[in-house]
Image (cartoon, protein in one colour):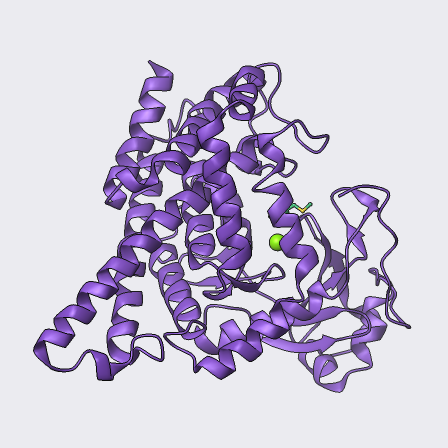
Length: 430
Ligand code: SR1
Ligand code: MG
């Protein structure tokens, strides 16, 4: 992406809202007005967007609250020099509704989409917080692994050729394949830029200068990530969320909701499962940087890795069960009749889940590397103020990312992965 790009076309009537203009807008819509209650002039409005792209408002009235997300015609993280199409709000709304249908209770309720202002009005999730922020504080979320496993098993299965009739799926692929600008961000920022010299890249410097140079010189790693990029671009397996890191999850102790699917398109399932696993692993490596005398975070680190294990175990079990119960067009029942056929089909399921496990590790690893060397980093590490301390956390994370991207096939169980995480961290501290 560069400043030479032309400005983005905006629909006639589009204007970015602000804390002054949002309440009058919501007040014009009776159903929304009723949810908030009272006089719009008295509603409390705050803009809280801390992501890279959009405006996010929280609105509270005497009867209740709403969350409003509006797309800006540029990348907020960078500014107007990086234009970005507004239609991402359309894809986000489509995905929110579709994923919400397949995984009820695991996404926010959606009340309105405005195709001119490119905004979506949703349920205000309270007292939820962004999972990443909670994990930095060392808060455990007992439901998160199981809920995320359920969300991914259901959204991925029911939008794949196993869970959706072929013609319907192709029609949905046709809609989402227009989300090219957001896919292009992923293609550049995750699969290309961190592996070359690029103005967008940064890292903890000079501490990680040699590590970044080693990545740029690593031929097997660049072959592996390019093969993965090709899979990302060409494998329309299911309607994926497309940006399923821990900043896209809102949690309480007993509730989990997935937000922000603006990068949604029909892509490889392992990109979603990998995003979650990769971001949990990044959090694991960041914990030493948040340790205090009162809490060395040892117990929390163990919980993070248990969460990785619980997630994958539950996901594989739920996804396999959905396939066994409802398997669709891709594996016709007529080919797998009788006891022998059923055993053969079970073998096919196990093999597909094993492939998905390898994809999960590789995509997860690519996500780890981009957050350490690319344009957009994670606050898990950014909030470690001392650069030496931060680099000491980041270095083994980068090495594990490299290992999983290149050697994923040699990891057959999720426990082997969590063992490797412990091992890489121990060796870095030795
Ligand atoms: C410039 S946008 C950078 C990143 O923000 C989003 O959360 C996606 O992860 C994207 O890659
Ligand atoms: Mg996002």
